[in-house]
Amino acid sequence: MKICLVIPPARSADRVPERVYGCTFTYYNQPPMPLLYVASVLEDDGHTIALEDFTVDNSWERFTRFVNDADFDLYIFHTVLLAEGIDTRAARYILERTDARVVFFGPHPTLKPRNFLLDERTYVARGEAEYVIRDLVRALPAGDIEGVRGISYLRGTEMVETDTAGIIEDLDGLPFPARHLIEDKRESFFNPKLAERPVALVLTSRGCSFRCYYCVPNAISWARELEWKRFNSGRKPPVRLRSPKNVVEEFEAAKAEGYRAVSVVDDLFLFGGRKRIMEICRGLGEVGLPFGILARCDLILDEEVVESLAGAGCRYVDLGIESLDQKVLDDIKKDMDVAAVERAVELLNRYGIEPKANIMFGASPVETRESVEKTIEGVSRLAINYCMFSIATPFPGTEFHEKAVKEGWAVEPEIHDLEENLSPTEKSLVSYPGLTKEELEKAIKHAYRRFYLTSGRIRHQLGRIRSLKDLKDLVLMGLKVLK
Image 1 (tube, helix red, strand yellow):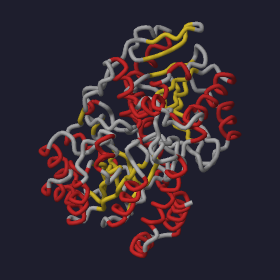
Image 2 (image 1 turned 30 degrees about the vertical axis):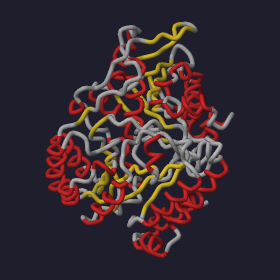
Image 3 (image 1 turned 90 degrees about the horizontal axis):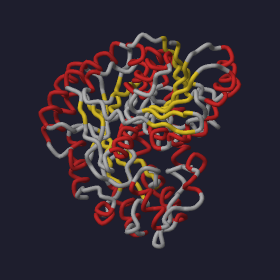
Image 4 (image 1 turned 180 degrees about the vertical axis):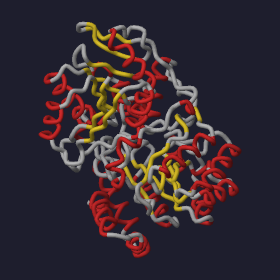
């Protein structure tokens, strides 16, 4: 079968949905990892695969010309919440102009499959979708899809949903993402926390066992979690890990393909115990690719582990801090002692690993103007050069969303139209009696200026410029976060 994985044009160049995590708009270009995983599974099954990304110029005309001239049997969309309108518009055009079929997968089709079933030629692959899509594609020629687990489709006007496919137990059995499909765009992929380009994405585990009630993890894990919760009484799915050997082999493959750095996008890299992490670090040290990870502050307090990460080439750790007010952390079920923050930052700096903080305002009604200011001042005093400030968004499917609607924290009607209204670094979709929407939006602006407009942090950013492209990227990102 001839299959096209497609990323359609966005509504505007400054509102291109970010599809690796799926909860904001794009700040910098990253490989479309969920599509690349599906591509590799389908290629292994003998299909001819193409990947077309129309967000480079956001030209609807170019998209329509492509569809009219192409002869694909199937188009596949990986859809996050902010892309529903964009993707369904493109799919309708395909269905109107061709005889091809359309498959949607990702967190939002998993949560709301009915929104994506445009006619009897559209299908939703729910949850962890690589093998679900493979099985659906195998069944389509004969039209015998009733036995495919994990799909939703239309029979007339009625939605039919098959039993869940569950989760992928053996992640080592998945082929590596099909990076050869994006070889011509490779040089555009970067991460501002890594000086080397291009940057590959690697996922060494799927899932998270912690209970933060606002959290939307990476898009693969989020779709997986939404599907599991639906069929398992709201419980989170178990975490599944790749073996150290398999992880090291993917780093080696990425290096051979010309990538010069890696962003590890696990919800939490430090799963699976000390022995697993130390074994991965030993292998990555031999590969020689710089990389960065995400971690909780309280999981990165083992000095020997931090030393091993540094020796393996770890350049940065994204720390989910959220607040420096313990009452706020307790209320949002962070299950972390705020004292762990300074200890984690100190330890990372000791071994030359860049700590990057993530702060989120507005996730809890116990937060006050005073605690917001305390957090801003506290994080500004930390020995760090990077911090992302955002306003908590009650995303559909989270416990936070349920409470925000029930308790009246959600700003109406905007919360029901996130695609148009979401901008976590500018706009609040929640408001509390003690901390209003307007105050949250002012806090974000104040936080960015207070943190970044210091002589030391300005010098740090300027010192990282190695080319005109670096300068351009820095200016564009600065305009986005400081406007």
